[in-house]
Image 1 (cartoon, rainbow, N blue to C red):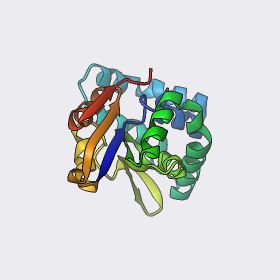
Image 2 (cartoon, one colour):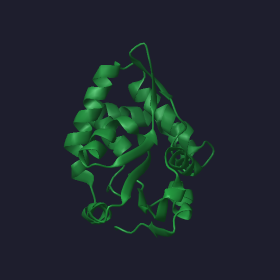
Image 3 (cartoon, one colour):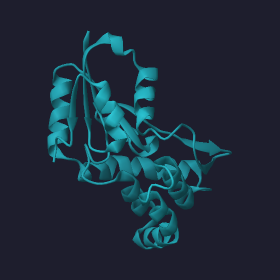
Image 4 (cartoon, rainbow, N blue to C red):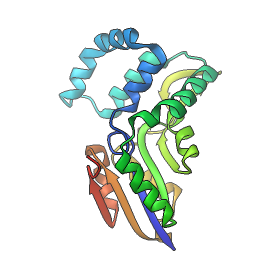
Length: 196
């Protein structure tokens, strides 16, 4: 048996939100700003907690990417993942990941962000990934999520679906927001905002 280390991604491993960074990377600053202005009523509604996290996120994702060609999306997602994620990493978080890996622990990134733009980076760093997946039909992005938003209790549900937790002696978890609460509660040793 070995240990399991669960890491949130945005804000825990990174210094910034990868969704906004990805949008800016794909469409540019001007279109991002214009889109945020048009979406501002929805964003205010979300900030006031009148609509849930997943709904706000899907509306934003749909606005920027609905109708985009699947191959084009995958290409820019991979380019972003391999060229830009390294620029927003927290060095102490990466040191901790390396520590777990050196001890032979299974390391999993559990993120509400979209799988497409985290997976290439995870593969490059030999890390498992559980994240939100998007729907594609007839080679086009539908703007919808294929899975539930991997946030809150859904992170725990997805981890339990993919791994038998009884196979591990100890579970570590690292997070930085309300969306990580249940993941942190799952662990034997939990760390809230440990790398700031």
